[in-house]
Image 1 (cartoon, helix red, strand yellow):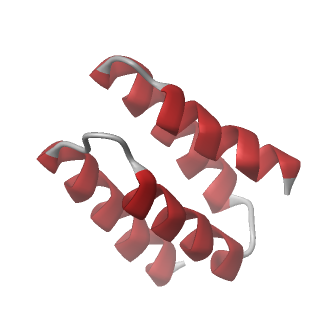
Image 2 (image 1 turned 120 degrees about the vertical axis):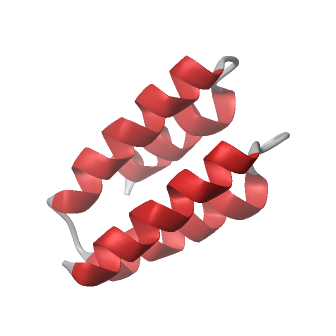
Length: 71
């Protein structure tokens, strides 16, 4: 779980849209190779705890959630 926590923390710590996007991309890569339930829990944590989330953040997280659901 440490790897997931670091991925989540990187998203929360991102100070630019580019850094946040890169951190979410890393999480997406991890999600593709992992257990879905764990990923959904992490995505929900990110969604509810992002500081000043943008509409783009929410759209991206929604898209990732749908894509993981289709795996």
